[in-house]
Image 1: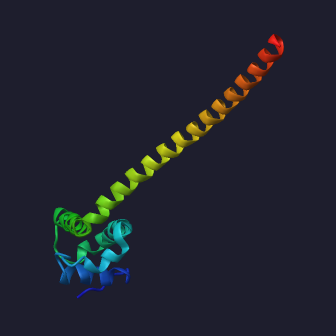
Image 2: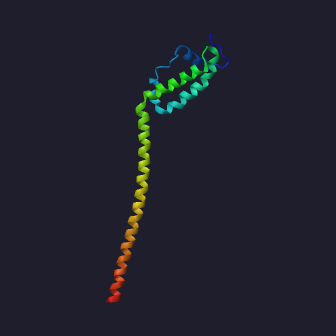
Image 3: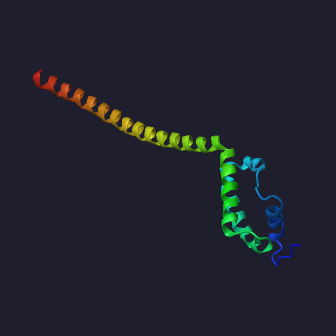
Length: 128
């Protein structure tokens, strides 16, 4: 019989009592990796349930890690996609910097060509 002082814990305690392995993480995949902090916060809050059923701290922590593992394992492509998306962003930033330098170099070369043309004109006037 659950009768905690904090009524917010009742649903959490019931979930932990009736679903000890929290095996089905599929409903949460829609939130992708944004859901990991929610899981962590949920378990942090659920630590208040410890007094309502016998479970060691180690067992509770194993349940928490197991839930995280199941969730992350269920969305491996998101993890990989996140990594490669980050890599792509970094490559694009480097490419943009190079393009900026390239633009500056082209401007410098155009100025050099203009100066060379002016030099040729001056030399023509001197020799002519």
